[in-house]
Length: 184
Image (tube, rainbow, N blue to C red; front, side, top):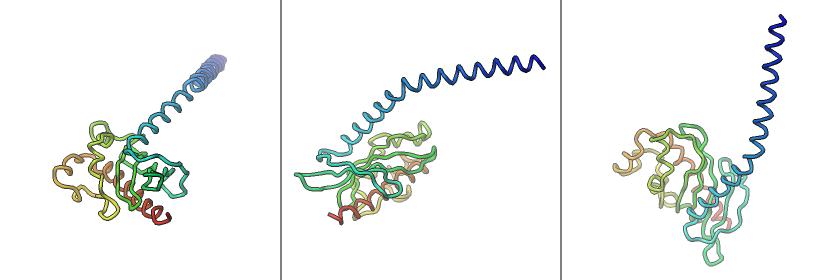
């Protein structure tokens, strides 16, 4: 019985020390991680704004869209950049995508995700997102591999759920851009 108390006490002390050390490491690294994430989002915003002036960013009340940033051309509203959360094979995925006021996809960038390396992770590349550029608005965002030309459909083989998640997120953003564009 005394041995169990000794072992339990030692384990308790080890756990307490580990908790203190982890809290200390977290307090040191958390600001650096947050600053890194802000830089990644800022770089992605610059990339998807494609030469438009970046306007004010507002929090969105639309499900799946956390923020909307207005894109300006000569001081007038020309489109929007949206931070969109959608679901992929590995769970939630964050997209940063730009749209014209009539809902056409200008550019998109996959940010945080847990997709499968070599398959769903391909969605992080610019070439992957080019499949969606120019869709939305007057032409539907491709929702299935069969909606793509054969050469592009082959490039999403093995990552159908990732493709579907990206497509649904971009379709949501396209619809919302039309709603917002009509309000101006």
